[in-house]
Length: 232
Image 1: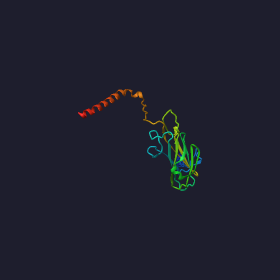
Image 2: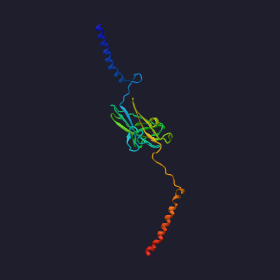
Image 3: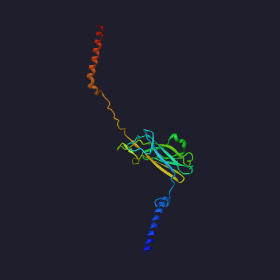
Image 4: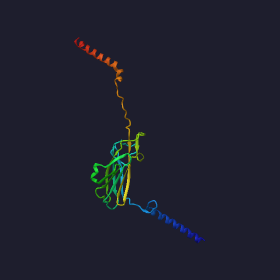
């Protein structure tokens, strides 16, 4: 009886050890909802940042409390593509997809020499290829830009992030590699702290009229008496 119980303990211990060693390894090697698809390599990456309109510095996101853009402003994004593999990719494609409140995506003029085959399937999409192959270990930056739409709802004055249609997404693909990243911004539709002074009409100056008359009379009397004092 004791031998059977000891054997049972050994079997349970062996099963637990196998579970600890096998399951994490299996999870690391398979992806997908049912664990049947191989994990795609993650050595091709893209990092998207947005330009701060005040400092000019590119940051991951602009959130409430940060500098804001205004309707019809041009927003500049920086795409940093990195090849972390040990091989080169001859065809690297970038797809930039704009949200609801950004339009007219373009490659910035300063980086047109870095890309080729630029296409705009619609007013919200920009597709292009890197001009030369992306070598192993190489990183390359490309700036793209878009325009803030001119019309916003009047229910509020500050719009931020994906919830307000201001999160921009970029996708990079090369052979079986792919990666994507986003950057969001805020738009202020009303300039804060600025007031309009009322225009003054003729009626606004009526209370000052008696003082103006007295001042004119006083100046005339002074001029009239001045020569007499000099002559005396």
